[in-house]
Length: 146
Image (cartoon, rainbow, N blue to C red; front, side, top):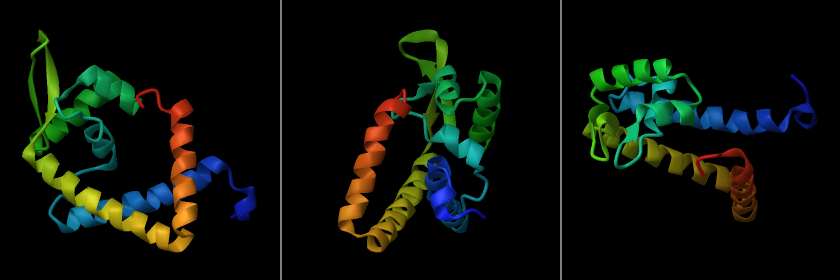
């Protein structure tokens, strides 16, 4: 493996993210949410509090509408989401979070908080604050949904 100075910034961002994601999925599985895949979770994370249209979920997750539809079908069968009529357009449907998703999110959020505390202990308060500030600034030019 290359020295840290040879790793790309993208890889240096990805490695801690993957470690965090792994911890979250382990905790979710222990709590009985062992039927959730990373692909499903990436779609689930993008469902807004009032529901989100499938086309918007696909765009935000950077997947095809067909793939998003397949993942939402799986999430619906597992009880994480439900489809409801869009009150602004009766022809459209919204993907909405079900109670099962809210319960899983609460557990996931708790583990994310624990991981961030661990990172802060390792980096120190000042460097963790700088890291968050730098990543927030990068989001301005990398996240079209910010």
